[in-house]
Image 1 (tube, one colour):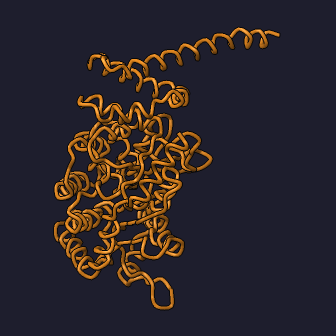
Image 2 (cartoon, rainbow, N blue to C red):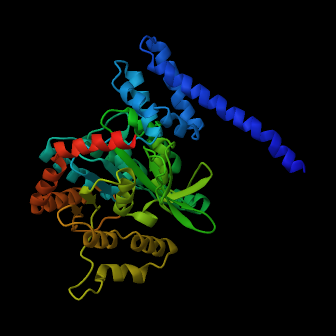
Image 3 (cartoon, helix red, strand yellow):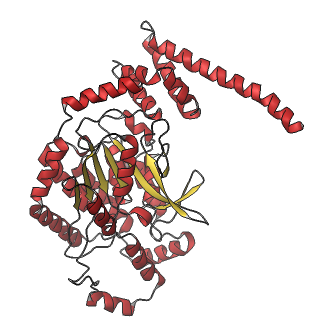
Length: 451
């Protein structure tokens, strides 16, 4: 009886609160539609409305019914920069996905790989030169894991780094974090490994991320110019299972849900820290009640995740181009398919039986990227999927910082591009194709019909 009474009392209160929230939302939208509203007042009302979308997600459906998306699209063209930015944020929170500017969906996927991420940055620079466009202007969705997440978030930060600046910064940060020249450095790393499961200095790593990637929330990057939809992947762990977690700078339209759990409110530095939390290197990263590890544990080649996310956003559009970048490989199999193990590796194995060495070899095997590539190349249409992953003279560890080794890495990358320049030209042509007039007319008709 008491529970019945509680429900009976609470239901009118909840209903009253819902009506009040809806009334406030309706009045805010009416205020924003007024032509004579002062800019300061318009700005304040818009801020409060967008904040409500975040605090009360259940209000979003009502706002959409009341025409919020159409109104915010108009406000995107306001003469006031702050109003334009918050209109974009409001649209992102409501799950609005604008029509594509190209014939189909253009997807960029970037693997993990530590210092070998320099390979990707160098190859992306080549693509920028071929198209005379910045990378973010060429793709509709960008997805990165670990090293890929570092690159994506650095490019999406307020600093707006170029790829050339990114390469310079990447080398500088890698040297600060990974260079362990003295015996004392190695002993302190070993001590940290046992105390916090992280060989490298977590405090230093996080301070560098905060300084160079920044505190802006991932969803707030929609307010910056020329930032596409992007996502980064981590692995969440608990006692029972591990799962992928996708950090997004977008939300999905009503009644659309990805199979991958995720969020959109983490700070950019937190996104990178979570996605690059490699076991034994930087240790786990707790965030909002979840424990994150390196996304490469599950998806070191995140292309399949990127395709799924893209099809959730644009279910009625075909894939125009998928470009997947790896961070280098060595020739590991003979002609009969058997794995080749070099004499050097065998000698090292006989000399080293440490748990760390064995663990890192198991981790390297678990994060193999080419198996995913083999499946995708079989499934995706020919001429629309491209995988660039150079063979290296020597396969470098994720934490290599010796200048001569980095120089060889860059030389291998340049040689790879020279051998595959025709493929890059084909990709450039696909990426620059614009949406036809017929497709644009279809977009308008479909929007009018389903609004």
